[in-house]
Image (cartoon, rainbow, N blue to C red; front, top):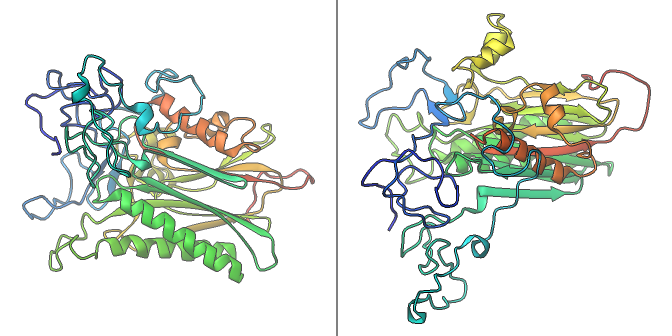
Amino acid sequence: MKMSQKPQETALSKCPGCEEPLEPGDLFCGACGYDLSAVPEPPQDHPTIAMAVPAENGAAPAARTPAGRPAGVRFDVPDGSDDFELAAPGAESGHAPGAAPASAPSAEASAPAPDPRTPAAELPSTPPAGTKLCVACRAGHVDTDGYCENCGHAQPRERDHMEQELGSVAAVSDRGLRHHRNEDSFAVSTTALPDGSPAVVAIVCDGVSSASRPDEASAAAASAANEALLESLPRGTHPQQAMHEAIVAASESVNSLAEEPGQAMEHDPHRHQNAPACTLVGAIMAGGLLVVGWVGDSRVYWVPDDRTNPPARLTEDDSWAAQMVAAGLMNEAEAYADERAHAITGWLGADAYELEPHTASFKPDRSGLVVVCTDGLWNYAESAAEMAAAVPADAQLRPLQGAQVLVGHALDGGGHDNVTVALLPFAVPPQGAGSACGDT
């Protein structure tokens, strides 16, 4: 049984017992089992609002929303009611400023101890090998959907917190403090060019929350882009062309999700209007080049090892705010303060406009760190200078710890969105002074 309705509404966003984030409709805390039936439910979080989603009765969507936002874009904000001002460090995350977030606890570690007053006959028996016990009641078995068959609590998901380190590249992804699941995904890999020199790849994808199955979209896109690069780079394809082809492959992979049998009616005219969707950003280090590619509002930053040199943002958002700045109608501060700032104008998905992969190639003349991230991080370090200030001084040598610290920075700031970041140290032999990162 999955518990999704409450006898009375509550206004809590965190469990009063263990301070874990709550989902609307929870009767009990999924982590500690706290009874929530007597407390008000929190206001529902709306991290992403679809602007062209058909009504449930099949009616066509209106051309504009009541707020005047144009149809045909997805409105991507971490929290429907809050702005992006930094909270006091540690105010919501519960750990020290700049500290790396702990890995997701195991079911054994997070489960409450049995009540010592419980008669021995009532204590749960040892389940069959391979069977998972509920982390809340410690008695029920977990079904294939991830819910306890006894008390109905949702169990911690594998994707809530993910980390990977591969050679000199590392990535961390976290659910954040407000979302009920992690809709981000990433892929990091290494391969070799035809001449035997190394190539390092990082792909980061952010699922569009207003779309159906955004977690599947981001996972499919990250995997498809990564596989395409691992196939094309060893063949000698130029890294910038390889990145373009990888984004196309990722787009096709996400598009195919809308066509899967049983997921959409074949003749439903609205089936693509809320199709699985995500953004994508990636970086390749190969042959002395740094190649970046993207669709959407996830970003790549360059942070030089010598912090006396200026950092830089290497991507331009596909968003309403970026369009306003490019048109000279607003400055960057005004545009990103607007409620429409996170309306993304480019994404991967069957309901997207014509796909326009962006790629750029750079040849750094000094060593630095490449930061590839979703807006769950850059909302709390938006400018290149702010991002550089958040990056630990030793991240070049310890990229996994550096990524953990950056995720912690976002959680300390409020953690309103899923947070994903990949770090790629870029080493360049010492040479003459010049720009930190130049176009090729």
